[in-house]
Length: 266
Image (tube, rainbow, N blue to C red; front, side, top):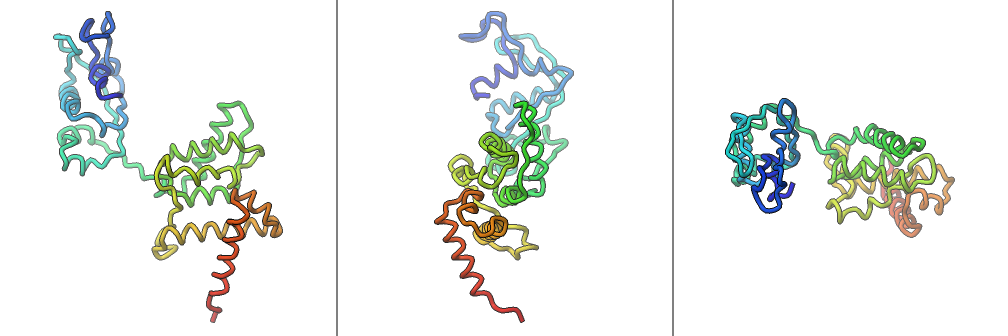
């Protein structure tokens, strides 16, 4: 909600409380949530003056509509969510410590998608099933190579970004199965979500390899697999992977040079 509308949306207002107010007044979200549940998304973005007023409501359930004098009561369960770092916000006095204690009695922490890449296959299947039901179309599948490609991404936009990517790929895919080529738009998505470079695997697997090395390794695996599948047809490989033939030749040359520089087994 826009900051200037938060108070009227939550508390409601009496007739004529301000210019443009409904002549009959309006019930706020606190009243509407009585005996029920209210969900406040991105509560970390709430203005500091509204934090004080919300704290008062949470303490005793009492409030007044804007322009009103009669105390009203609402008994509701509050669920809130935020991607903010409350510790730093409290230290900088942009979020009240007493309000944080009130809303954090039970806290569920959801890791970023980049920290649970093993969930991507199931999430992707869920998104494809929902997409098919919504559009009344057959459910599309997704190749193992495409799944591994999605697992190589950093996903700064988390699950919403993944859902958007899967649905966009499903829209433009002509066949029954999504391939890596259908996700070519991710390469140009940095301006929307920030950096979207491939991420490195756990240190236990790579000994702390950096992001660039991890991306190159994933690319090499995908290219080699596509080369085997197409019998070395570079044109088909480039089309399937959604890359230019010149970039494919460059990567193959780098891969060949890396292979020649490896030490022989002892």
